[in-house]
Length: 250
Ligand code: SF4
Image (spheres, rainbow, N blue to C red):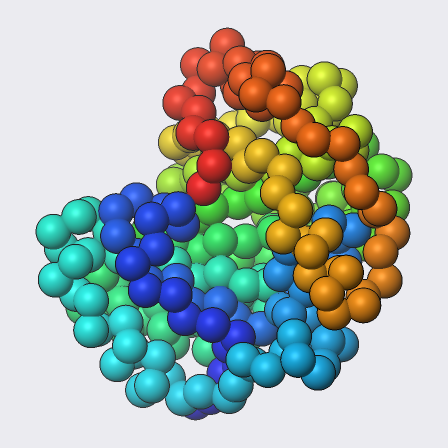
């Protein structure tokens, strides 16, 4: 079986526990205004999509197996990211099966927007979900990401009920996701779930902005104000107050 990827990053330390290999799968059903990985999208061509390639399962598993010793020593493993890894569910499943067979820890970094039956299948073979929650207000969510958040919240509830391990990731986009109202709503929603191991607050970075300028992509966001340390700490405090272990950054 073949799949399409746009990168494989070795020695990653921000994509889950320990030292990891992160496989970036092409494709994403969302269209976030701040997207920092636009090369994941199917409609992107030209220089930005240069690294996109079709690979066989054997090629990826060979790459994964190379760093086995580092995973074992550091409590690491493999992270499947994107884009949205569940945009290629069968390819993802075969890779997860390989890792399970080898006893390699797996994390799936997901935006949550994929058919629920695919989450059911993937959850059986995934040790940890890195699950993005962006905006709780559905109208705002649709405006800034191109899709409703209902499926995302339903899938998160399902994973929680099934006992999956969950690390929530909240990207802080100035004035959009980092408002007190939104962060309180995210924290309230989480507090009704079980299985949430921790929360990662992802401070705003300008990678997306730079790529939009460099590759002349549509820019609906413009230049956002800088985020202060105090803004980031105040966001983290909302989750700490509810008893979550909070990491700042990956
Ligand atoms: S979910 Fe991630 S990869 Fe997809 S559009 Fe949003 S930021 Fe980009």
